Length: 299
Image 1 (tube, rainbow, N blue to C red):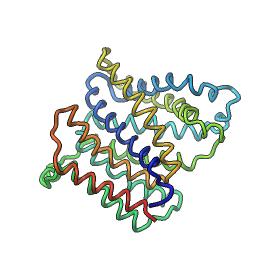
Image 2: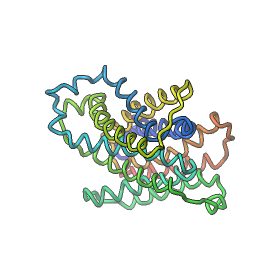
Image 3: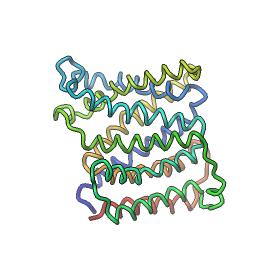
Image 4: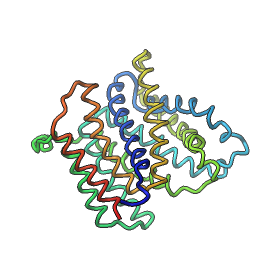
């Protein structure tokens, strides 16, 4: 296996999808309580407040991030402003089955964008790994039954998920290739807070547009507060921390394969949350997805 993909790196790249699977479930459960763009804005507002005590110095007037504000604005747009907002928007009109199936194209977009934009070569192993990984997702989504796939119907929400997946692929590549002050990139909270700052600006603009179109809604209460706290601490701060470190240690192309663990983790988390029963196809899917990761990351 590639020396860059150590067990600790693999663990980080696996923990992020686990938390994001919880984000998809909570986002679906909360869609009647709050509109999608508002959910994304409030989520990152809470994350901003939590990160502030850890990295407030990065916002000082003499901070080295300001000369590179365009770079952080782009990272904030793709990773914070667009991806999560589009995901929540997709869950509003589409089913979790369709959304996660569309999201399984992540390794393909990672390899394609790396090749087209940065000239990164795609090996035969990576192509085989992508195929195995996508097959694993198909097994999960079809529940081991081909007829389930044949009955799938795609709606507008699925297009939003395609855009979200492309946005995240670009974000991941830029994350690994971004240049900037070493003292900021070396401190995870500062690097994330710089992105969140600009991401909040984008999210605020999207939420304002949502309100102007009459699509804003908000039902205050403990269920919504609990959902916001979970997605701010887990899928936002911790998951982005794990993903950023994993991408830096491995490569965006390899990290993309770990994204296909999201639908599998979503299915597994649905067992205790939604009362579903585990099946053999869960084990088969896990084996295929892990095989794709191993094949793609071997020398």
